[in-house]
Image (cartoon, rainbow, N blue to C red; front, side, top):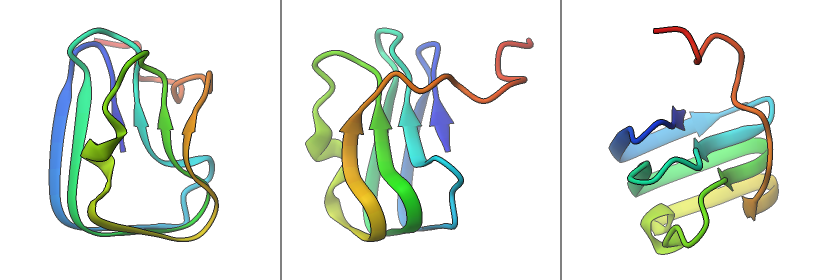
Length: 87
């Protein structure tokens, strides 16, 4: 799940499994955001990759469990997946 370019995503009762890099990615553009509520992210090298300075990471932890992940939350510079730059 990726939010970027000012996009916003709100998920409730989520289940994210077997992500190749990150369970969710918050892009660096101002106004971009993800709000997670109730659920889990499992089997991912990083549970949530945050690329935005000052993003409030509590928005990613409202009754959300990070299970069997290398790192639950990380501020990174991972590139966004290919194809997301297309209109």
